[in-house]
Amino acid sequence: MTATVERIKQEIRNLAPDEVDQLLRDLQNEYTMPSPDGDDEASIEAEWDAEIDRRVQEIEDGKVELISGEEFERHVDQLFAQRGLTRTRRA
Image (cartoon, rainbow, N blue to C red):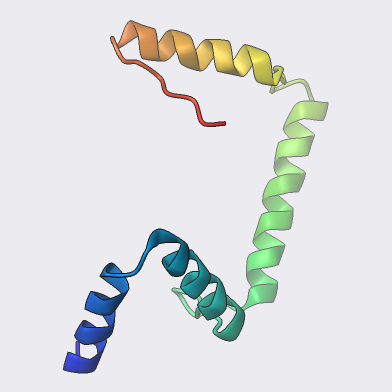
């Protein structure tokens, strides 16, 4: 990386968290990240649509059983407890 980029990175590290958040939002609004493999946005959307269709079909075919959010939380809590870990929850 160039010296300029390194200097900018160091300056970002010195910003307050809210300033970093604002900077990231501004950058997201001004620049578009290129796709890692050169895929265009339409092909990525098509892949997501196919994945969504596949998952819906699994539910409709009875291959997958949906659970409530509360049941999921209980299950995750049990997994943490089995491993002797404490799970912290975010508000």
